[in-house]
Length: 258
Image 1 (cartoon, rainbow, N blue to C red):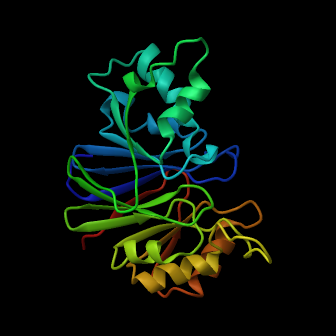
Image 2: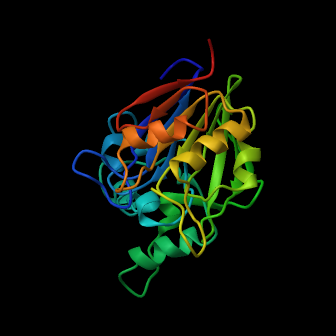
Image 3: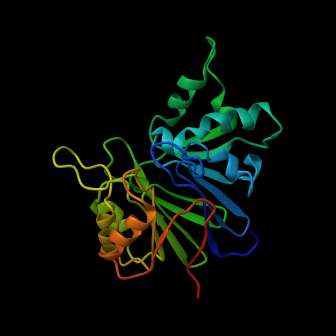
C-alpha cells in the first residue's frame, strides 16, 4: 500500500486451531511502505504472501507464545533462510521474553543450535516498550493471560489501532486503548469462568473495554468455537454504542481519517 493511511488486513482470526477457511490469529498492519506482521498464528504465513514477502516485512510483532498466535514463525524461519528468500538482514521480531529460546528449542535438530538469529533479530517486549518501525509507532503493554502476554497500540499519520492480543479485561488494555480510532479485541469466551482465573474476554467484556477506552470503533476477533461471529458482534454491541465489525479473514480496514 502506497498511501500513508493506517491499514489492517486480517490474515486469520480463528482459535484455538485453524478452520477450513480461517487461519489462526494474524494481521498485516501497514502505512505507506511500512508493513508489520502482527501475530503469526497457524496458517497465516500463506495469506501473508498475498500482500508481502518475508523479505519485504519491516518487523514482526508477537503478542504471546501460544501456538495460535506464533506457530507460523517456525515455517517462516525455513522460508527466510532455506528457500527463495534472500534476507538483507534478519527480520526485526518483537515478542515476549523467551521467544528466541522457544524457537530454537523447537527448531534445533542437532547438537548445534539452529541459527534463528540469522532469520530474526529478536527484541523482548516489556510493559511500556516503545519502538518506531518505519512510519509506525508501537507501544506495548503487558496484559492478563496467565502467561507473558502483550497488547499493542500502533499509530501512524494521526490514526491509532490497538490490538488486545489474548487477555482478560484489564486496566492496562483499557489505558492503552484510550481514545484509539479502532480497537481490535478478542472475544474468545462464551462466558466468564465460574471459578479460576479469567484469561479471555467475553463479547460483553469486549464491548465494555471499547466503551471504557472511548474507542472510535470495535473490531471483534479471536471468536471462540462456542460462539458465531454474528453472536459475538451482537453481544459486544450491547455494551458499546459505536460501530462493531468482525475480523473476517481477508477483511481490510482503513483506520482513522475521514
